[in-house]
Amino acid sequence: MAIEVFNRYENKFLMNTDTYEKVLRALDEYMELDEYNKMHDFYIIANIYYDTKDHHLIRKSLSKPKYKEKLRLRAYGVPSLDDKVYLEIKKKVFGLVNKRRTKLVLSEAYDFVATGKKPELKKYMNKQVLNEIEYFLSVYDLEPKLYLAYDRKAYFGRDNRDLRITFDTNIRTRREDLRLEMGDHGEPLLDKDVWLMEVKAEKTIPIWLTRMLSEYKLYKKSFSKYGTEFKTMISKVRNSRIVM
Image (cartoon, rainbow, N blue to C red; front, side, top):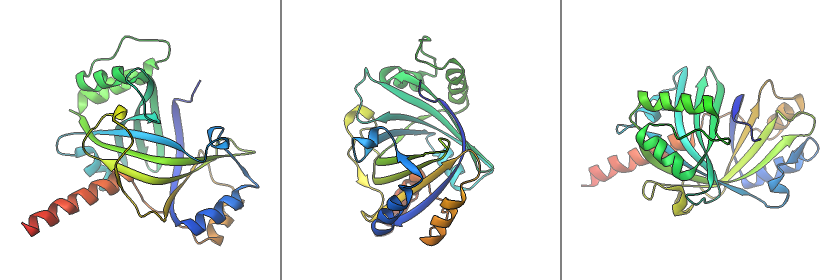
């Protein structure tokens, strides 16, 4: 059964392709590829982010509060309406990330968020998470705001499975066709030569990883895919008003 509750620290780093390739070589001694990446270079993660009409959740997140939360719908690849996906609540409290998710059929997930009413409980669903999402939907009047997808390569620690390192590239977004089954097309969020590395661990990171980060001059960066897209969108809107 896939893990549906996560509690961990997540640190993000941006790098160019040359550094990315060096880091991959350095990881070989300590990390192993995710099972899917052993057969494919990357796998696609696609998300729909939900927010209020006035973008309350992302605006609050960008203000860097001690506590923030968001709701998103996640699929691996491009699903059909009959495929199973994940509906997730992601919270961050004093730097600790808590993610809680449940499997749903895509059509069930759309109906749940649109109506606020839980679907009939089935074996593949997490009852507790369904209750939490139901409450979340009662607090916020949400609507789909952003489609965001990327290609991912993931590693796990050989001796510590709680240590996970991921690399995301080709991050693309759109604010129309806000349905997962509509394909994974979108506008690029970052330059082609930029890679996002995330180090995810329940506790402190190992000494060898600290040394590697220092060797390649990689420093933690506050970076949100949704937040970056939102700031870019706002900037474009303001610039268009100035031109007009």
